[in-house]
Image 1 (cartoon, one colour):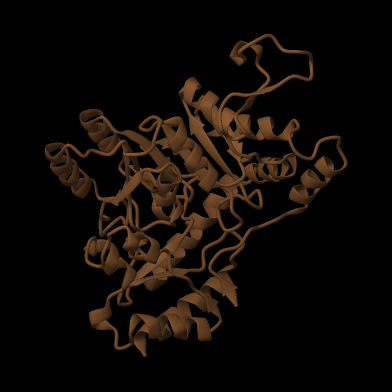
Image 2 (cartoon, rainbow, N blue to C red; image 1 turned 120 degrees about the horizontal axis):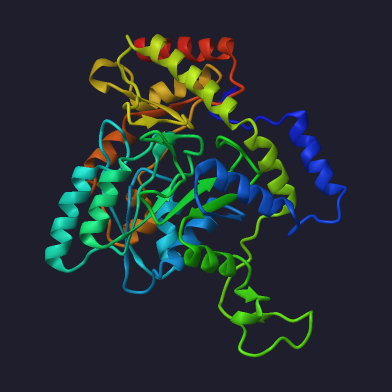
Length: 386
C-alpha cells in the first residue's frame, strides 16, 4: 500500500535524537529554545513557542487572545476538528465560513458577507481562524483588512503550511495575523513525532502562551507577589497546562528543519507531475496563484461526478483495492455529531459539503518515488474511467 503521507527519517535525524538521549536533558533542555529560534528565524517572526501539538498551540493562542465564555470564533468547515475545538476548550462558541470552491480555503467573499450581517446583529467574532488548507496560503491580506474593519483577531492555522509563502514572504511571519500555528505531526512537512508551534510578533502574547504551556508557573521574581523564598522558588500565577515539547522532539525538529527546502521542493515536483498526468481526466485539480507558493502538504483531487460512472465511494474503494492509500481531508466539521448537537445542520455550508462529496487525497510526501507516483496516476486513470 502506498500511503497518502508519511515521515522521512534520515541518519542525521536519528543521530540528533540519540545525542539528546545521551545528554543530561530529555525534556526542558537547550534543544527546545534552539528549535524555537530556528523556526522563528526561518519564518521572520519575533517569537516562537514550541508545544506538544498544534492543537495545544491553537488552544494557547485562543487563551492568550482572551477568548472565553460568550465569545465567538469563526473558522472553515474544511479542516481538522482542532481548528474549531480550540474555541470550545475556552468556553466560546464556534461558527463557520464556507470555502472558496477554487482554493478550498475560507472564502473571503463569504467572510465579508457574513461579517456585514454579524455587525448588524451585534454578533461579531472575537477570533477568526483561517486554515491554509493542503499547504496553500489563504488570502491573508484581505482577511487582515476585514479584521481591521470589524475588530477581530486572527490566528493562522498553518498546520499544513510550513515552507509555504504568501506574497513572497514565509507563512509564519505573522504580517497579517496575531499568531500562526504549525503542526509537526508525522504526515506534515517536517515532524517532531508529535508537536506544534505558535509564532507571534507580540511579546505579550508570547509571554502569556509561554506561561500557560507550563502550568501557569513562573520563576520570574518580577511576576511574583513576594520575593522568592530561595533559589528553588516558583509560583503558579495562572491555571495553565502541561503543553511542553521535549528536547527529544525538538532535536528531531531541528534536524528535519535543515531539509525543509528539499522536502517542499520535492513535493512541488510531485504536484507538477500530478498536474501534467491527470489534467485530461474528469477531475478538478488543485492549484496556486502567483501570490501563493503552496507547501503541498496534501494533493486533493475532486471528481467531476457527472462525467464519471462510478460513485465517489466506488472510486475511493477502487484506489484502495489497487494498493493506493488514499484518504479524504476533511469531513466538514459542522456535520460531526458533536457540532450537530450545537445546532449545525447539513446544508449550512454548501460549498464545503460539495467538496466533501468529490474530494480524494492522493499520496503526497517527499519520499514518494516517481515509479510509485506513476502507479498512483495509472490507478486514478483506471478508477475514474471504468
